[in-house]
Image (cartoon, rainbow, N blue to C red):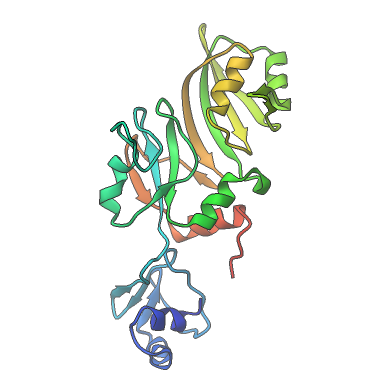
Length: 242
């Protein structure tokens, strides 16, 4: 959306008056003064200010990253009263968000929450091939044959998993730490995959979705995504960036 159109839709002034504000150098986008009338901005991604005051569209899209701890359900509410991720983030954001994808109660790590349904659907659908990476501690030491079988796809619940990438990050006498990268996200998929080759999961942490990484957040912490991160996610999901 053009900057002057954004200002008009936000109720600051008419589009013509908005053009005058831009020419006078009174409008900043992401901290920088903008004088170009055709400058493109996106609600919920770019921070727009007029004379030092932030301007927002009602119903703007929000994008947040949570480092989900163990013990919380990835859902908006639970009929049995169990704790959900919304108990961590919901009341402190100020708008209704929805978790993107699944992390079961015993899993942890990167969880995206947004009210952008189109982006959420594209990130989840395997057609768009947005990768998700996990650090997975399993019992025992999977053989080369086990790993090759997993990479090629195994049958779980009557359906074969898509090919994936797996690398060994480390081993101990009792456990192996793997990095597993998928392009799909079936319910409890990794746990069932590893059980299928006889190496049950002990700990599962999602560390990446597309270009978005978990680094820098402790368990239970969350933050708003930067404009660059949102644009990178949309690009990975094949959304038009015009």
